[in-house]
Image (cartoon, rainbow, N blue to C red; front, side, top):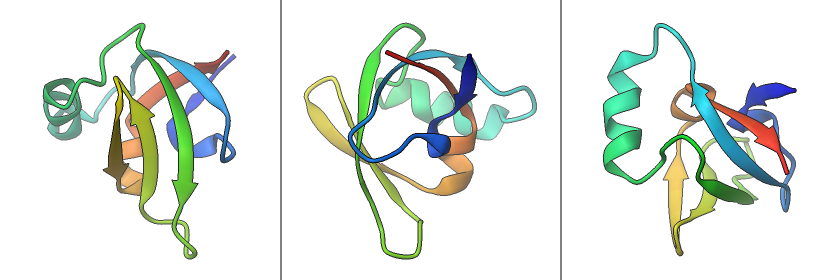
Length: 77
C-alpha cells in the first residue's frame, strides 16, 4: 500500500516507491539529497506542531517540510 512519507508514525521504516505527480519542484531537490526510489528510510522525529519531519536516510538525518514529505511515496517495510 502506497502512502505519503508524512503519513508514517515516528519509528516506522519504509521504502521509497516513487514521487507524487505534480511535485516536480521538490523531486529534483529530494533526488539530490539521496531520496531515490528503492532506498530505505526511517521517520525518526516530528516537530511538536507537525512540521518539519526528520528522516534517517543513507546514514544521515534529513529534515523535510510537510509539503516536501508529501511528494515522497513510500511503502511500509
